[in-house]
Length: 351
Image 1 (cartoon, rainbow, N blue to C red):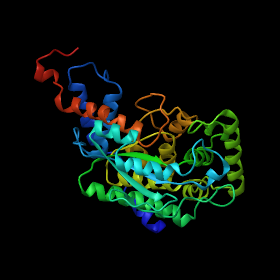
Image 2: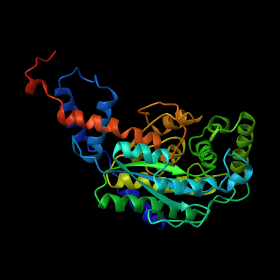
Image 3: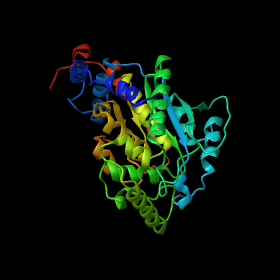
Image 4: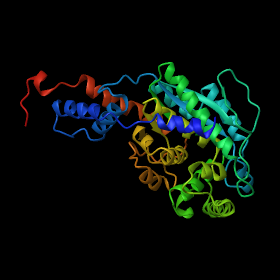
């Protein structure tokens, strides 16, 4: 896909349907409760109405898109786990044994695993094959990928959403797998959100403080080497990002273009949301922040995007786990809109 085609996707992202938001607000205020007393549930109901144009949309067909890709920066010893865990975990997703599979089954969601940049030859009937290249390059020595590869990965994510939307899927969650991807995410935060590197870099998969300091140095060296352009999100993504992050940028932009809500998972998914919102500020209105990750820097990152997490469970697994946990809460907001009595229907006096 050319950058011109990417611009076409971005151009298709419109504002929220304000008349639907107002209709949802009026309906919420007619229900048998004090105005605003259901807090975040009411906020979700209004946002879903604005996204879909319906005050009680049917979002029962939902998908978790898990993008998988490897990172050359793992050569620098930034992770507690070896790079070969990425393809091993992909097979675990496909077998239904990962945490996101378990939680998705409970939330009535389907998991779609995508090989967008795994450094291995994988073959499985359930795997979506969109490999752009076998892992990124080591960003401390060369750009993680070319600009064309970054755009191709974004295109893959958007195309998957478009295909699933044509099959009736109306709500999406972002998931990822890629050893080393918190390093790339931290680098993107430092560039695009102008965060201090020491604030953006966390413990990832469970490294100690000494290795975190090394990870900070790795990110600082990569940024110094490439001087990514903060005003050009694709430049930053190509130089210090990741293939699965780029794929999720496409998922988010594609969902917004299809007027479907997209539930953003943790730190890595939020880095993708940061890139997406930089490319299309209007896309942020279609995102729901799922949870506050235990990963350092996530709260500041969410603040920059303008997302408010629904839950906070000290999680830092990724995969889409936090996003999937929010599906039942979103369902609860929509159930309130469909099933709760109004003051008039229940014959109850207003305060």
